[in-house]
Length: 101
Image (cartoon, rainbow, N blue to C red; front, side):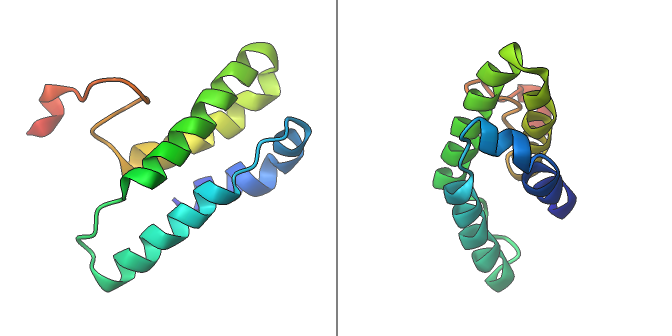
């Protein structure tokens, strides 16, 4: 997950700044989750983190339809979300019942 965070923020910083994409709240929520995870390896990611990831994904998806440079940061963010919330592939989609096994 660290590599995806680095790629999202550092490698694509110019695109994010040009498009006024602020990921500060998402990284704050991610930090809170990681702190809880250090105390208990069973701590699940919290809903506020998923909401922040979803908001950024929706914004980047709209941007990527107009500007191809927004695709890679969206891809990195999607991978972060997929690692944290594997039961729901894309924001708004129902979980696949086959994944419950």
